[in-house]
Length: 114
Length: 113
Image 1 (cartoon, rainbow over the protein chains, first blue to last red):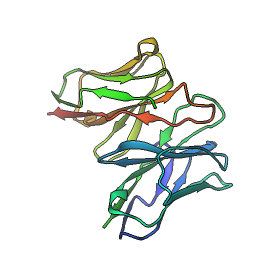
Image 2: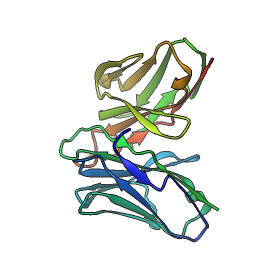
Image 3: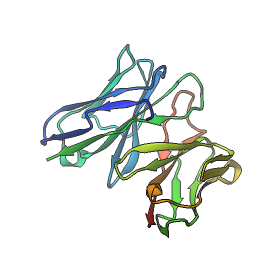
């Protein structure tokens, strides 16, 4: 168990809908990362937050947004869902106050858009 | 951006065999992690190894940063070792605070009883 929790584990929804994925980092970790794993794109970095502030952005679509709350949990919002958004979404966390750190990954949320 | 290549893409072995998985990267890195993704999709940290050699039980890893590659060794394979092994790196070109990892495409390992 990495200490990173994600809910829900599975999500089935329809095209055009909006969903929210939730992540709680390891205790004491300030940085949260979101990654998407799809069959055609592999594992890709979406966005990073550090202590509530956006720190880095990857290939995140404009229909997607995220935030990190004062209690350090993070949410990834996916809107106007398309079939191609079906993927495994991972959250990871790290301490955030050293330059080079291990990232620990949560169990993922498997999203299926029908 | 940095490119990460893993080889071989697929590997099928008998239980008890040894294997070597390779990760090549196109630029200098200051973070390199190996992960095992099990059949249930969970990503399990194996090593944080931007340089040097580490061992953990039947697994060991070596990163030669100056030559831009890392190797993961699995000895006496067990069926529970099956899954996909990923290498992920952080380029030194990233600015402080941007810790994004770039993943390779993985090596799918299947261990046959």
